[in-house]
Length: 601
Image (cartoon, rainbow, N blue to C red; front, side, top):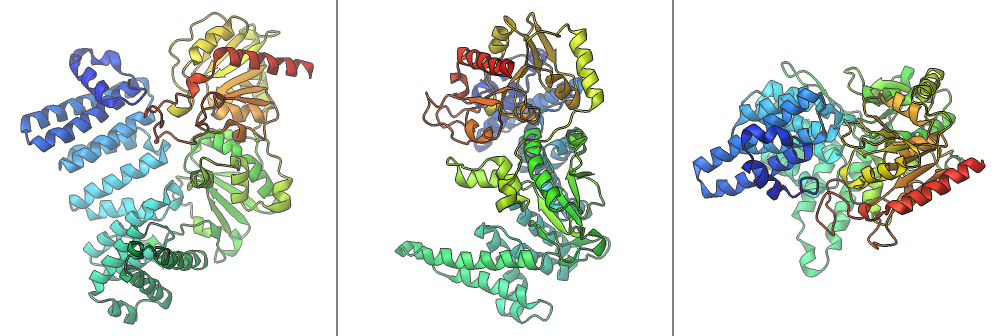
């Protein structure tokens, strides 16, 4: 029930369990859904205005979240579901005006490593800023928002930037710096985003600030491009709603004119500088688009920056062909790849890029000759626009986003680049000898993807069947429960490079849509990839030794291209019913074909 998102039933059952026995049910999905169900129940109870019921539900949620935190701390493993639960509950605590409690939970989330999930971390930072503003702690709120506004490469969703700038402008106003306050409002209009309601917030605030629009237009402290920017926005919001008379295209044309002008400002004048006086320090205008920076210092003109605040490992591997093509295009340039340190090992031996810690305080994207922001993922944007009729592979999308086009794209070697060193080869051989695997057929199985909707629900049954005929290595990033069969070795405490080194010795790999599929492609290891909502044909089209399996012969809705935040349209659940329709016998038969092909070669 918890796995499929039935939070109301999970909450009801979990609450009925005596508190002393709840530690027996500390599965991350159960606790996450029990908390979410409790929050929804609390919202209903609040409407009744019964204080005892509100306090009782609040006490239950606090206790359940603390149980979740204690269990994760005990195992030293902090899954995404924990941070989601903290986000859910802190938002409700803010609504209840329990600001100190909310802040305490948010601080714990930071301590547990929320930066692993940039989208969640940005929400945590924004909530902390809101709390500080409510408590009158303006310097603390400013430090958070200025940190985010000055580092757009940390923000996966650029739509969140307008709210950050708006809140930052209010803080500077309260601090008494009206000139910077006005400047930040204009920067909020200048930044390229398509939500016209967000733009209206800035226009309304500017009009209220100047009292009359003509005062802004006549102001000597405002430059001409910004005056024109405000004017076309003001005219747009003065237009009547032509949709009522079936002439809505007039409004759309006018909004398009605004966006074209804003787009030009972002590309031409992206290095605007805003300095704030003490005690609030300094803020530079955040250059929020991928673009060439012609004002970079001469010594950095031949440096290229690529930023990516998150994984996943599969995406990073799919970027490597584009990185290689970019290096071939600019052989005398340094290509700096700024990513979280935990992914550095993925690029060991890769001479195309120089690694930078994306959390490094001195990292300044404005000082590079070229900047490509892959935190605002070009592949996700492209797929969301074209789904369910996605035609381009992620490898091609990433390569194009790096400026590789025409002949260079045609010549692109689309094989992911991952390098196993000599020491790791010795480590793999030692593992093979210690576990008597030499001369045996060995199948590697990645048990889970990082995202629920990609998981194959019969994976343990598959491992059972495989173990009857092969030696099986089961890989997972979390402690593996089950799979205790003869001929099965569980590997859940390996580093990434050691896991990949061991997997490189397998005769074949079976995996859901996740990292081991792309790793197998990099090493020319036969791979059977299990797909559901995502189009496996498109994702693996460049992988010579990979076969994909899905259930499109049974379910015409495939591929639907949904993600973790969008439930299945057929079941309204997080899990994908289509994944369960891939039959075990079909997997076993395809595996035999793959191994036979390898043996022939």
